[in-house]
Length: 470
Image 1 (cartoon, rainbow, N blue to C red):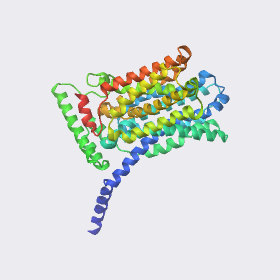
Image 2 (spheres, rainbow, N blue to C red; image 1 turned 90 degrees about the vertical axis):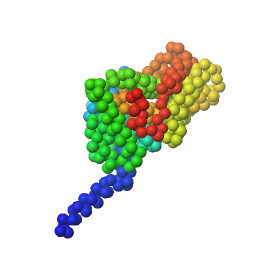
Image 3 (cartoon, one colour; image 1 turned 180 degrees about the horizontal axis):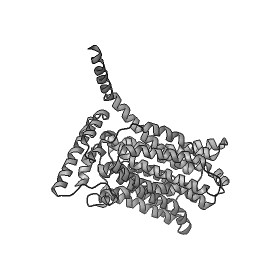
Image 4 (cartoon, rainbow, N blue to C red; image 1 turned 120 degrees about the horizontal axis):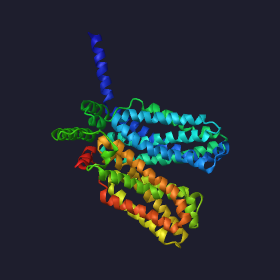
Protein backbone atom coordinates (compact mmCIF):
# COMPACT_ATOMS: atom_id res chain seq x y z
CA UNK A 1 0.00 0.00 0.00
CA UNK A 2 2.77 2.40 0.99
CA UNK A 3 4.74 1.51 -2.16
CA UNK A 4 1.74 2.27 -4.36
CA UNK A 5 1.40 5.77 -2.89
CA UNK A 6 5.01 6.93 -3.24
CA UNK A 7 5.23 7.04 -7.02
CA UNK A 8 2.07 9.12 -7.19
CA UNK A 9 3.40 11.60 -4.64
CA UNK A 10 6.68 11.78 -6.51
CA UNK A 11 4.92 12.37 -9.82
CA UNK A 12 2.76 15.12 -8.28
CA UNK A 13 5.87 16.80 -6.86
CA UNK A 14 7.59 16.61 -10.25
CA UNK A 15 4.58 18.16 -11.98
CA UNK A 16 4.38 20.97 -9.43
CA UNK A 17 8.08 21.74 -9.90
CA UNK A 18 7.65 21.79 -13.68
CA UNK A 19 4.85 24.38 -13.42
CA UNK A 20 6.28 26.46 -10.55
CA UNK A 21 7.01 30.18 -10.90
CA UNK A 22 10.72 29.48 -10.56
CA UNK A 23 10.60 26.97 -13.43
CA UNK A 24 8.70 29.43 -15.64
CA UNK A 25 11.09 32.28 -14.91
CA UNK A 26 14.05 30.01 -15.64
CA UNK A 27 12.50 29.05 -18.96
CA UNK A 28 11.95 32.70 -19.93
CA UNK A 29 15.55 33.56 -19.09
CA UNK A 30 16.69 30.62 -21.23
CA UNK A 31 14.51 31.65 -24.18
CA UNK A 32 15.74 35.25 -24.06
CA UNK A 33 19.35 34.07 -23.71
CA UNK A 34 19.29 31.74 -26.71
CA UNK A 35 17.67 34.35 -28.96
CA UNK A 36 20.03 37.10 -27.81
CA UNK A 37 22.86 34.60 -28.31
CA UNK A 38 21.70 34.07 -31.88
CA UNK A 39 21.75 37.81 -32.60
CA UNK A 40 25.19 38.08 -30.98
CA UNK A 41 26.31 35.32 -33.33
CA UNK A 42 24.82 37.24 -36.29
CA UNK A 43 26.92 40.29 -35.49
CA UNK A 44 29.97 38.16 -34.74
CA UNK A 45 29.84 36.36 -38.09
CA UNK A 46 29.52 39.62 -40.02
CA UNK A 47 32.30 41.28 -38.03
CA UNK A 48 34.90 38.51 -37.75
CA UNK A 49 35.98 38.66 -41.38
CA UNK A 50 37.23 42.25 -41.14
CA UNK A 51 40.42 41.66 -39.09
CA UNK A 52 41.60 38.80 -41.36
CA UNK A 53 40.86 40.36 -44.75
CA UNK A 54 44.59 40.94 -45.32
CA UNK A 55 45.75 37.35 -44.72
CA UNK A 56 42.79 36.00 -46.73
CA UNK A 57 43.61 38.28 -49.65
CA UNK A 58 47.27 37.16 -49.58
CA UNK A 59 46.64 33.44 -49.07
CA UNK A 60 43.84 33.10 -51.62
CA UNK A 61 45.20 35.77 -53.99
CA UNK A 62 41.92 37.64 -53.96
CA UNK A 63 41.20 40.54 -56.28
CA UNK A 64 38.65 43.25 -55.50
CA UNK A 65 35.81 41.34 -57.21
CA UNK A 66 36.51 38.12 -55.30
CA UNK A 67 36.73 39.93 -51.97
CA UNK A 68 33.46 41.67 -52.78
CA UNK A 69 31.77 38.32 -53.50
CA UNK A 70 32.87 36.96 -50.13
CA UNK A 71 31.82 40.13 -48.28
CA UNK A 72 28.46 40.31 -50.07
CA UNK A 73 27.65 36.63 -49.51
CA UNK A 74 25.94 37.13 -46.12
CA UNK A 75 23.89 40.09 -47.42
CA UNK A 76 22.60 37.96 -50.30
CA UNK A 77 21.92 35.12 -47.88
CA UNK A 78 19.90 37.37 -45.56
CA UNK A 79 17.83 38.57 -48.51
CA UNK A 80 16.97 34.96 -49.41
CA UNK A 81 16.84 33.48 -45.92
CA UNK A 82 14.55 36.00 -44.20
CA UNK A 83 11.37 35.44 -46.26
CA UNK A 84 12.11 31.75 -46.82
CA UNK A 85 12.54 31.04 -43.11
CA UNK A 86 9.56 33.26 -42.34
CA UNK A 87 7.34 31.19 -44.62
CA UNK A 88 8.72 27.96 -43.14
CA UNK A 89 8.25 29.03 -39.52
CA UNK A 90 4.61 30.01 -40.18
CA UNK A 91 4.00 26.69 -41.94
CA UNK A 92 6.00 24.17 -39.87
CA UNK A 93 6.29 25.92 -36.51
CA UNK A 94 8.71 28.09 -34.53
CA UNK A 95 10.21 25.23 -32.53
CA UNK A 96 11.63 23.04 -35.35
CA UNK A 97 12.80 25.97 -37.46
CA UNK A 98 14.55 27.63 -34.51
CA UNK A 99 16.68 24.49 -34.17
CA UNK A 100 17.16 23.95 -37.92
CA UNK A 101 18.37 27.54 -38.27
CA UNK A 102 21.05 27.14 -35.61
CA UNK A 103 22.00 23.78 -37.17
CA UNK A 104 22.69 25.65 -40.42
CA UNK A 105 24.81 28.15 -38.48
CA UNK A 106 26.78 25.28 -36.98
CA UNK A 107 27.42 23.41 -40.24
CA UNK A 108 28.35 26.56 -42.18
CA UNK A 109 30.65 27.81 -39.41
CA UNK A 110 32.47 24.48 -39.22
CA UNK A 111 32.82 24.36 -43.03
CA UNK A 112 35.05 27.46 -42.87
CA UNK A 113 37.82 25.35 -41.34
CA UNK A 114 38.03 23.28 -44.53
CA UNK A 115 38.21 25.97 -47.22
CA UNK A 116 40.97 24.98 -49.64
CA UNK A 117 43.60 27.29 -51.12
CA UNK A 118 43.04 26.26 -54.75
CA UNK A 119 41.12 27.82 -57.59
CA UNK A 120 37.75 27.02 -56.01
CA UNK A 121 38.49 28.73 -52.70
CA UNK A 122 36.59 31.90 -53.54
CA UNK A 123 33.47 30.00 -54.59
CA UNK A 124 33.68 27.80 -51.49
CA UNK A 125 34.02 30.72 -49.09
CA UNK A 126 31.38 32.85 -50.85
CA UNK A 127 28.94 29.90 -50.77
CA UNK A 128 29.63 29.23 -47.09
CA UNK A 129 29.14 32.89 -46.20
CA UNK A 130 25.93 32.92 -48.27
CA UNK A 131 24.47 30.06 -46.23
CA UNK A 132 25.55 31.82 -43.04
CA UNK A 133 23.58 34.80 -44.30
CA UNK A 134 20.56 32.54 -44.87
CA UNK A 135 20.84 31.50 -41.21
CA UNK A 136 21.15 35.13 -40.10
CA UNK A 137 18.02 36.01 -42.08
CA UNK A 138 16.26 33.06 -40.49
CA UNK A 139 17.15 34.32 -37.03
CA UNK A 140 15.15 37.51 -37.67
CA UNK A 141 12.02 35.78 -38.91
CA UNK A 142 12.02 32.80 -36.52
CA UNK A 143 13.45 34.05 -33.24
CA UNK A 144 11.65 37.41 -33.25
CA UNK A 145 8.13 35.97 -33.47
CA UNK A 146 8.96 33.22 -30.95
CA UNK A 147 10.27 35.69 -28.38
CA UNK A 148 7.38 38.10 -28.96
CA UNK A 149 4.81 35.33 -28.52
CA UNK A 150 6.23 34.28 -25.13
CA UNK A 151 7.03 37.78 -23.78
CA UNK A 152 4.73 39.58 -21.31
CA UNK A 153 3.30 42.71 -23.00
CA UNK A 154 4.85 45.00 -20.38
CA UNK A 155 8.35 43.66 -21.18
CA UNK A 156 8.00 42.70 -24.85
CA UNK A 157 9.53 45.86 -26.32
CA UNK A 158 12.52 45.76 -24.00
CA UNK A 159 13.25 42.08 -24.64
CA UNK A 160 13.00 42.46 -28.43
CA UNK A 161 15.14 45.59 -28.32
CA UNK A 162 17.87 43.77 -26.39
CA UNK A 163 18.55 41.71 -29.51
CA UNK A 164 19.95 44.73 -31.36
CA UNK A 165 22.30 45.46 -28.46
CA UNK A 166 23.46 41.85 -28.72
CA UNK A 167 24.12 42.34 -32.45
CA UNK A 168 26.28 45.43 -31.85
CA UNK A 169 28.18 43.71 -29.04
CA UNK A 170 28.72 40.63 -31.22
CA UNK A 171 30.08 42.75 -34.06
CA UNK A 172 32.48 44.62 -31.75
CA UNK A 173 33.61 41.44 -29.97
CA UNK A 174 34.35 39.86 -33.34
CA UNK A 175 36.63 42.78 -34.19
CA UNK A 176 38.42 42.54 -30.83
CA UNK A 177 38.80 38.75 -30.83
CA UNK A 178 39.72 38.63 -34.51
CA UNK A 179 42.39 41.28 -34.08
CA UNK A 180 43.90 39.60 -31.01
CA UNK A 181 43.99 36.19 -32.70
CA UNK A 182 45.42 37.65 -35.90
CA UNK A 183 48.15 39.48 -33.97
CA UNK A 184 48.96 36.20 -32.20
CA UNK A 185 49.58 34.53 -35.58
CA UNK A 186 46.40 32.43 -35.68
CA UNK A 187 45.55 31.18 -39.21
CA UNK A 188 42.64 33.07 -40.73
CA UNK A 189 40.54 29.91 -41.13
CA UNK A 190 40.66 29.32 -37.39
CA UNK A 191 39.81 32.95 -36.71
CA UNK A 192 36.64 33.03 -38.81
CA UNK A 193 35.79 29.51 -37.61
CA UNK A 194 35.60 30.61 -33.96
CA UNK A 195 31.87 31.18 -34.52
CA UNK A 196 31.49 27.38 -34.51
CA UNK A 197 32.00 27.26 -30.73
CA UNK A 198 29.12 29.63 -30.03
CA UNK A 199 26.91 28.00 -32.67
CA UNK A 200 27.42 24.58 -31.05
CA UNK A 201 26.59 25.91 -27.57
CA UNK A 202 23.43 27.63 -28.84
CA UNK A 203 22.35 24.52 -30.76
CA UNK A 204 22.48 22.50 -27.54
CA UNK A 205 20.69 25.25 -25.60
CA UNK A 206 17.80 25.26 -28.07
CA UNK A 207 17.12 21.56 -27.74
CA UNK A 208 13.86 20.91 -25.90
CA UNK A 209 12.33 24.38 -26.25
CA UNK A 210 8.51 24.29 -26.55
CA UNK A 211 6.39 25.34 -29.49
CA UNK A 212 4.80 28.78 -29.47
CA UNK A 213 1.18 28.72 -28.17
CA UNK A 214 0.31 31.48 -30.67
CA UNK A 215 1.45 29.35 -33.60
CA UNK A 216 -0.44 26.31 -32.28
CA UNK A 217 -3.60 28.42 -32.10
CA UNK A 218 -3.27 29.37 -35.78
CA UNK A 219 -3.23 25.63 -36.57
CA UNK A 220 -6.31 24.91 -34.46
CA UNK A 221 -4.32 23.06 -31.77
CA UNK A 222 -5.84 24.95 -28.85
CA UNK A 223 -5.49 22.32 -26.14
CA UNK A 224 -1.75 22.02 -26.81
CA UNK A 225 -1.44 25.80 -26.70
CA UNK A 226 -3.17 25.99 -23.32
CA UNK A 227 -1.05 23.13 -21.93
CA UNK A 228 2.19 24.85 -22.95
CA UNK A 229 0.95 28.15 -21.52
CA UNK A 230 0.09 26.44 -18.24
CA UNK A 231 3.55 24.88 -18.00
CA UNK A 232 5.80 27.70 -19.24
CA UNK A 233 3.99 31.05 -18.95
CA UNK A 234 3.91 32.87 -15.63
CA UNK A 235 2.38 36.23 -16.55
CA UNK A 236 -1.44 36.38 -16.01
CA UNK A 237 -1.51 38.96 -18.81
CA UNK A 238 0.07 36.40 -21.15
CA UNK A 239 -2.51 33.76 -20.19
CA UNK A 240 -5.23 36.32 -20.94
CA UNK A 241 -3.54 37.10 -24.27
CA UNK A 242 -3.53 33.43 -25.29
CA UNK A 243 -7.23 33.15 -24.39
CA UNK A 244 -7.88 36.24 -26.52
CA UNK A 245 -6.01 34.68 -29.43
CA UNK A 246 -8.13 31.54 -29.18
CA UNK A 247 -11.32 33.62 -29.15
CA UNK A 248 -10.10 35.71 -32.10
CA UNK A 249 -9.27 32.58 -34.08
CA UNK A 250 -12.72 31.12 -33.37
CA UNK A 251 -14.32 34.31 -34.70
CA UNK A 252 -12.16 34.18 -37.85
CA UNK A 253 -13.07 30.53 -38.41
CA UNK A 254 -16.77 31.27 -37.92
CA UNK A 255 -16.61 34.16 -40.39
CA UNK A 256 -14.78 32.00 -42.90
CA UNK A 257 -17.36 29.22 -42.52
CA UNK A 258 -20.23 31.67 -42.92
CA UNK A 259 -18.76 33.08 -46.13
CA UNK A 260 -17.78 29.57 -47.29
CA UNK A 261 -14.14 30.49 -47.59
CA UNK A 262 -11.06 28.78 -46.25
CA UNK A 263 -8.56 30.37 -43.88
CA UNK A 264 -5.42 30.57 -45.99
CA UNK A 265 -1.90 29.75 -44.87
CA UNK A 266 0.94 32.25 -44.89
CA UNK A 267 2.09 33.59 -48.25
CA UNK A 268 3.81 36.67 -49.57
CA UNK A 269 0.63 37.54 -51.46
CA UNK A 270 -1.34 37.81 -48.22
CA UNK A 271 1.05 40.52 -47.02
CA UNK A 272 -0.39 42.76 -49.75
CA UNK A 273 -4.05 41.90 -49.20
CA UNK A 274 -6.59 44.57 -48.28
CA UNK A 275 -6.22 43.73 -44.59
CA UNK A 276 -2.45 43.76 -44.28
CA UNK A 277 -0.90 45.97 -46.98
CA UNK A 278 -0.56 48.94 -44.62
CA UNK A 279 1.24 46.79 -42.06
CA UNK A 280 3.58 45.46 -44.74
CA UNK A 281 4.20 48.93 -46.17
CA UNK A 282 5.00 50.39 -42.76
CA UNK A 283 7.31 47.66 -41.46
CA UNK A 284 9.22 47.25 -44.72
CA UNK A 285 9.43 50.95 -45.57
CA UNK A 286 10.35 52.02 -42.03
CA UNK A 287 13.10 49.40 -41.79
CA UNK A 288 14.43 50.31 -45.27
CA UNK A 289 14.56 54.04 -44.51
CA UNK A 290 16.15 53.48 -41.10
CA UNK A 291 19.12 51.39 -42.26
CA UNK A 292 19.88 52.87 -45.70
CA UNK A 293 21.53 56.15 -44.53
CA UNK A 294 23.20 54.50 -41.54
CA UNK A 295 24.87 51.69 -43.48
CA UNK A 296 26.19 54.20 -46.00
CA UNK A 297 27.60 56.63 -43.44
CA UNK A 298 28.88 54.04 -40.94
CA UNK A 299 30.55 51.88 -43.59
CA UNK A 300 32.43 54.81 -45.08
CA UNK A 301 32.74 56.87 -41.88
CA UNK A 302 36.38 57.74 -42.43
CA UNK A 303 35.82 58.85 -46.04
CA UNK A 304 32.79 60.94 -45.11
CA UNK A 305 34.39 62.60 -42.08
CA UNK A 306 37.70 63.13 -43.88
CA UNK A 307 35.80 65.26 -46.36
CA UNK A 308 34.77 67.54 -43.48
CA UNK A 309 38.19 67.64 -41.85
CA UNK A 310 37.89 64.65 -39.52
CA UNK A 311 38.45 60.91 -39.83
CA UNK A 312 40.08 57.82 -38.45
CA UNK A 313 39.97 56.16 -35.07
CA UNK A 314 37.70 57.62 -32.43
CA UNK A 315 36.42 60.43 -34.62
CA UNK A 316 35.31 57.97 -37.31
CA UNK A 317 33.75 54.54 -37.13
CA UNK A 318 34.48 53.97 -33.43
CA UNK A 319 32.74 57.19 -32.37
CA UNK A 320 29.71 56.52 -34.57
CA UNK A 321 29.45 52.92 -33.32
CA UNK A 322 29.69 53.99 -29.69
CA UNK A 323 26.92 56.59 -30.09
CA UNK A 324 24.80 54.05 -32.00
CA UNK A 325 25.12 51.56 -29.17
CA UNK A 326 24.15 54.28 -26.67
CA UNK A 327 21.10 55.10 -28.78
CA UNK A 328 19.94 51.47 -28.75
CA UNK A 329 20.46 51.18 -24.98
CA UNK A 330 18.43 54.35 -24.39
CA UNK A 331 15.53 53.06 -26.47
CA UNK A 332 15.57 49.67 -24.76
CA UNK A 333 15.37 51.33 -21.34
CA UNK A 334 12.47 53.60 -22.33
CA UNK A 335 10.41 51.63 -24.85
CA UNK A 336 8.00 49.98 -22.41
CA UNK A 337 7.64 53.19 -20.39
CA UNK A 338 7.21 55.88 -23.05
CA UNK A 339 5.79 53.78 -25.89
CA UNK A 340 6.74 53.01 -29.49
CA UNK A 341 5.60 56.05 -31.48
CA UNK A 342 7.43 58.67 -29.44
CA UNK A 343 10.66 56.73 -29.89
CA UNK A 344 10.02 56.16 -33.61
CA UNK A 345 8.57 59.27 -35.26
CA UNK A 346 10.38 62.33 -33.78
CA UNK A 347 13.83 60.77 -34.20
CA UNK A 348 13.26 60.28 -37.93
CA UNK A 349 12.25 63.91 -38.46
CA UNK A 350 15.31 64.97 -36.47
CA UNK A 351 17.70 62.77 -38.47
CA UNK A 352 16.26 64.01 -41.75
CA UNK A 353 16.92 67.57 -40.59
CA UNK A 354 20.47 66.75 -39.45
CA UNK A 355 21.42 65.19 -42.80
CA UNK A 356 19.80 68.08 -44.68
CA UNK A 357 21.87 70.62 -42.71
CA UNK A 358 25.07 68.68 -43.43
CA UNK A 359 24.20 68.44 -47.12
CA UNK A 360 23.19 72.09 -47.60
CA UNK A 361 25.66 73.83 -45.28
CA UNK A 362 28.77 72.70 -47.14
CA UNK A 363 31.16 75.12 -45.39
CA UNK A 364 29.92 74.46 -41.85
CA UNK A 365 32.61 74.35 -39.11
CA UNK A 366 34.20 70.91 -38.95
CA UNK A 367 33.46 70.44 -35.25
CA UNK A 368 29.76 71.17 -35.86
CA UNK A 369 29.64 68.60 -38.67
CA UNK A 370 31.20 66.00 -36.36
CA UNK A 371 28.63 66.74 -33.65
CA UNK A 372 25.82 66.44 -36.21
CA UNK A 373 27.09 63.07 -37.46
CA UNK A 374 27.38 61.76 -33.90
CA UNK A 375 23.86 63.00 -33.13
CA UNK A 376 22.57 61.29 -36.29
CA UNK A 377 24.20 58.02 -35.25
CA UNK A 378 22.62 58.22 -31.77
CA UNK A 379 19.06 59.07 -32.81
CA UNK A 380 19.08 56.81 -35.89
CA UNK A 381 20.12 53.80 -33.81
CA UNK A 382 17.43 54.70 -31.28
CA UNK A 383 14.55 54.36 -33.74
CA UNK A 384 16.26 51.55 -35.66
CA UNK A 385 15.78 49.49 -32.48
CA UNK A 386 12.06 49.50 -33.31
CA UNK A 387 12.80 47.52 -36.50
CA UNK A 388 13.25 44.53 -34.18
CA UNK A 389 10.04 45.29 -32.29
CA UNK A 390 7.31 46.46 -34.66
CA UNK A 391 7.36 43.57 -37.21
CA UNK A 392 7.18 40.99 -34.40
CA UNK A 393 4.17 42.78 -32.89
CA UNK A 394 1.99 44.12 -35.69
CA UNK A 395 1.64 41.07 -37.94
CA UNK A 396 -1.00 38.48 -36.92
CA UNK A 397 0.17 35.08 -35.73
CA UNK A 398 -0.32 33.25 -39.02
CA UNK A 399 1.77 35.89 -40.87
CA UNK A 400 4.22 36.93 -38.16
CA UNK A 401 7.16 34.90 -39.48
CA UNK A 402 6.81 35.69 -43.17
CA UNK A 403 5.91 39.31 -42.43
CA UNK A 404 9.03 39.87 -40.37
CA UNK A 405 11.08 37.94 -42.93
CA UNK A 406 9.81 40.07 -45.82
CA UNK A 407 10.51 43.30 -43.94
CA UNK A 408 14.04 42.13 -43.09
CA UNK A 409 14.73 41.15 -46.71
CA UNK A 410 13.43 44.48 -48.00
CA UNK A 411 15.65 46.32 -45.53
CA UNK A 412 18.71 44.51 -46.95
CA UNK A 413 18.00 46.21 -50.27
CA UNK A 414 18.40 49.51 -48.44
CA UNK A 415 21.58 48.33 -46.70
CA UNK A 416 23.09 47.25 -50.01
CA UNK A 417 22.05 50.48 -51.75
CA UNK A 418 23.50 52.59 -48.98
CA UNK A 419 26.75 50.64 -48.91
CA UNK A 420 27.38 50.46 -52.65
CA UNK A 421 25.81 53.73 -53.85
CA UNK A 422 27.49 56.21 -51.49
CA UNK A 423 31.05 55.94 -52.92
CA UNK A 424 29.65 56.41 -56.45
CA UNK A 425 27.49 59.34 -55.35
CA UNK A 426 30.37 61.11 -53.58
CA UNK A 427 32.58 60.75 -56.68
CA UNK A 428 29.93 61.78 -59.22
CA UNK A 429 27.59 64.28 -57.60
CA UNK A 430 29.55 65.36 -54.51
CA UNK A 431 29.25 65.00 -50.76
CA UNK A 432 26.58 67.71 -50.29
CA UNK A 433 24.02 66.26 -52.74
CA UNK A 434 24.77 62.75 -51.41
CA UNK A 435 23.80 63.87 -47.89
CA UNK A 436 20.66 65.56 -49.25
CA UNK A 437 19.61 62.24 -50.83
CA UNK A 438 20.23 60.50 -47.50
CA UNK A 439 18.08 63.16 -45.84
CA UNK A 440 15.30 62.48 -48.36
CA UNK A 441 15.36 58.77 -47.47
CA UNK A 442 15.13 59.60 -43.75
CA UNK A 443 12.32 62.06 -44.50
CA UNK A 444 10.37 59.37 -46.37
CA UNK A 445 10.67 57.12 -43.32
CA UNK A 446 9.43 59.94 -41.06
CA UNK A 447 6.36 60.57 -43.23
CA UNK A 448 5.58 56.85 -43.41
CA UNK A 449 5.87 56.40 -39.64
CA UNK A 450 3.87 59.56 -38.89
CA UNK A 451 1.08 58.07 -41.00
CA UNK A 452 1.17 54.36 -40.12
CA UNK A 453 3.19 53.65 -36.95
CA UNK A 454 0.82 52.24 -34.31
CA UNK A 455 1.16 52.44 -30.54
CA UNK A 456 1.51 48.90 -29.19
CA UNK A 457 2.88 49.55 -25.70
CA UNK A 458 1.36 47.22 -23.11
CA UNK A 459 -1.07 45.66 -25.57
CA UNK A 460 -1.40 41.92 -26.13
CA UNK A 461 -0.59 40.46 -29.53
CA UNK A 462 -4.23 39.40 -29.83
CA UNK A 463 -5.42 43.00 -29.33
CA UNK A 464 -2.96 44.26 -31.94
CA UNK A 465 -3.95 41.51 -34.40
CA UNK A 466 -7.64 42.30 -33.96
CA UNK A 467 -7.02 45.94 -34.91
CA UNK A 468 -4.92 45.00 -37.95
CA UNK A 469 -7.55 42.52 -39.15
CA UNK A 470 -10.30 45.15 -39.29
